Amino acid sequence: MKSTSYSRVQRSFLRYQHVFVFLAPIVFIVGVFFGAPTPSEAGASYWLEYWWLFPAFLLGATIVNTVGISGSAIFVPFLIFVYPLFASPLDPPTIVKVGLISEAFGLSSSSIAFIQYGLVDRRLALALVGGAVPFVVAGALLSFVIPEPLFHGLLGVALLSASYLLFKADLDHESDATDDTDDAEDDASPSADGDVETAIDGGHAEMPNDPGKLGPAGVRTDEDGNVTRIDREGDDYRYTREGYLRRFANYSIGGTFQGLAGFGVGELGIISMLGTKVPVRVAIGTNHIVVALTAILASLVHVFGGGLVGGHSLSLASTPWNMVVFTVPATVTGGQVAPYVSNALSTSTIKAFVGGLFAVISIALFLMALGGV
Image (cartoon, rainbow, N blue to C red; front, side):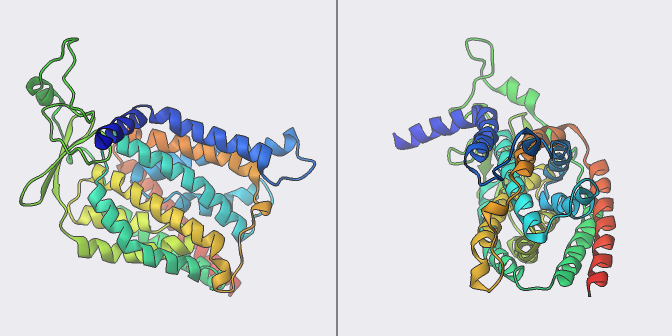
């Protein structure tokens, strides 16, 4: 009985997830407006000062969530290099806070969207998060004690590596899935109103069904470990979950950079899943869960872990709330748009743009590191 009730609640949440997801930033903004520690003279000019961050973060969130990498890979360089062109430069702790708060909302939004779309392999996600956790914590603690020039240098190495791996990876979707919508509709029994009969979990009745899965996609794993997954559009994906050790190696390195700089696990993680023959759209969807959970963990360590290693702590009172009231809804919107962009477009152009951008940013970071030595 409890399982049936939980399944009903899950289906209802996923069916109306757009409503819940977009209510979250509204509640956040209302909470910030009435409860956050802001300057006593804060008026309309204070709250509207950074309206131009909305389109910038919307574009960035859509790009990174479409490719399946961490939002901070775009947001942190943007706040370091572009933001000072229009406003006063931010100090590193503030950059960390704005990036982590924005990324947390954007990743949560996109993760729910990919779950609802049926592109998340929960077994892979849980195994990868479990393996990355100690490295994320170590990297976050390390960020409190390393010199800023070394931080910029390591950031440059991470971005340059991500650029190389993105150019090397095949991120085209079209060959990953076969459109089984027509076949599924032919095989399924029509209901009284003429629609295809649906299974209790939201999938088509004749499609693979896994009652314990996340989201509406049909999933079946045979005795040999071969996985058949069908998303809500009827596209078919077949793969195995072999290659855990190879993925663990990539996620351990990526997890360290995730804790250190706010990104890394997504970039290296997506490459490791593609290298072990996980279909790209399933890899992107699953990677969102991994990045979201490790980002939340890294955020908690950044907020509360400074005292453990004698580093700085992040003060809520110094948070630029008039910035995050625009960056949060922007990243939430970008997270919801990403699955549709991922489905509609080939990612080769986006891959080339992001890879080239990473290469340029990494060079700038190396120059900053050399200038600070």
